[in-house]
Length: 304
Image 1 (tube, rainbow, N blue to C red):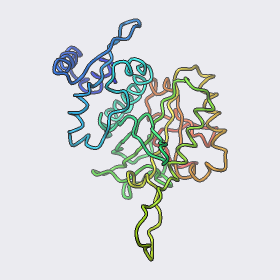
Image 2: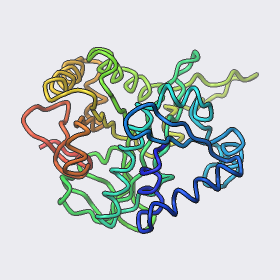
Image 3: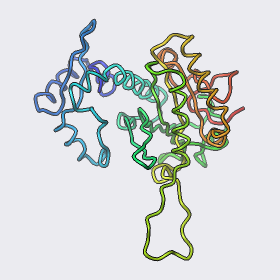
Image 4: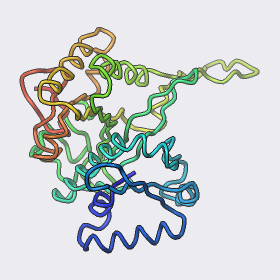
């Protein structure tokens, strides 16, 4: 979902917003999108796809195999989730605008909401978004250490990164947007879910004859990603003291022995949304949850 101003900045920031409004109105007339009006100051209009629009978009090659998030096409569900949904879209917009400024590649379809990652037994990890971001330059200006343009890895382990199709480095990230609607302990518990995803390997299908040399089980995420995406927590809905409390909760969870191997391989960073809005996501505003004495850019990998 997105407000009119968000849609304008995502799709056509170079034209007048009236043109974006006309395009949205036309899509609504054709039954592809609908809108709700929030009962707050300014009466913000929030746009979302209709079932027909989602079905039609799902036939595009770029979206084939993707399912819309649950409730994305239902007016009541959109109204109930508008606060969180618009904050997620605002976060996406920050990465899109930052990529445009830097000459990197991150387009609207590179931000994918609520991608389901099964854990077996009906359980799953569903991040608020999956981000694809191609960094054109492999220099250290953004806080990434030891980036190698030749190999396409970012830092010591290259977690979540591969060589881009046109040079540079491809970064992937799971993004969790927290609006302080749950306690710090519940937020920190999400780390454990990602550790389980990192380890989860589905049991092989039963076969009539046992193979003499069975293939080793492989983690399910390797079917989607060359390396496990980094994990970004974006914190909103609370003041500086609340942000500090939530970062401390994440760091307390990170001290668990069960997370040690995961944290050696996967960068996990947290930042207040207010800092992203003020400085941009590439600025050194992110707190590595394994460390407490410095801040880095979100493309950072190597621990000093």
